[in-house]
Image 1 (tube, helix red, strand yellow):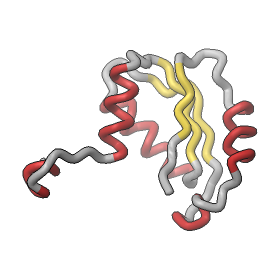
Image 2 (cartoon, rainbow, N blue to C red; image 1 turned 60 degrees about the horizontal axis):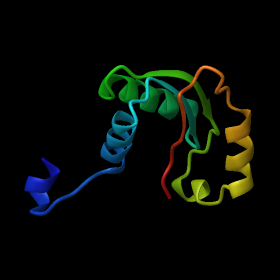
Image 3 (cartoon, helix red, strand yellow; image 1 turned 45 degrees about the horizontal axis):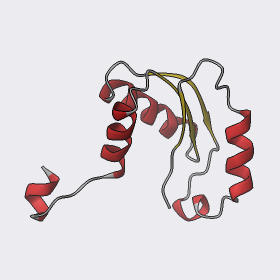
Length: 99
C-alpha cells in the first residue's frame, strides 16, 4: 500500500521489525522499549499478531513519553537495561525505538 502511494519501494520501521523477526524465526522474544508502558504493550500485541508463532516472553518499558527525550537516552542506559531484562526464556532480545 505504501509503495503504491509513494510510487517507489518503501518500508516502515514496523515492517522491518516484522521482516527481521520472521527471517530469524524468532519464537520467544524479550522486548525493551523507551516508550511508556501502554505503548510497549501495544507493540507487544502488534508483534505477537504479526510475526508468525511469536510470543513476547518478557518486556520492559523505560517510560519515556517524548520523542525528543528518547533521543537523549544515553547508550549506557540502553546497555544496562538490556542486561537487566529477563532473557532466560527468549530466543532474541529486541531493543525497539527510533529517534
